Amino acid sequence: MSAARTSNAADTERVGGELAERLKPGDLVLVTGELGAGKTTLVRGAFRALGMSGPVVSPTFTIGRRYEGRDGVRLSHLDLYRLADLGAEDPGLLDDYLTPDAIAFIEWPAVALVELPEPTVRVAMCHAGGDERDISVEWDQ
Image 1 (cartoon, rainbow, N blue to C red):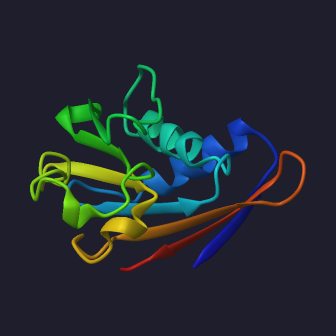
Image 2: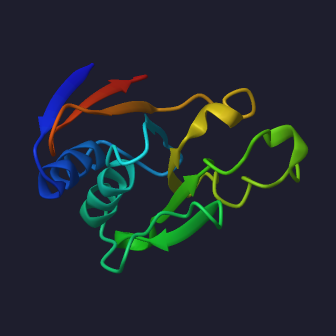
């Protein structure tokens, strides 16, 4: 496990970029943390490092977004905050995002933990006062 403390959005994006260096298609990253902890900022940094140049925004109201990174690598960004129970949703709701050719990041994954494949990485973020954030990264590998 590794840990970092960031003091601004650029630092949080840098941590995301460092995380991305070890990822490959088929990997799943679970990102937890309270509202405003910087989850989407971390994902943005990872996607930038993976070659995505357009805007990266939270998919809170759409559940997920797909992007394309360098060398055609698919990038999936899911936000399950609005879901109360994945069991009440379409059984294939996440299938288009969790594919072998994609690196997937899921914010607020707790509602789907039983249905999800084993994650490659678990990232936990929390406020540490002011603009600071504590970030812990736990690799399965």
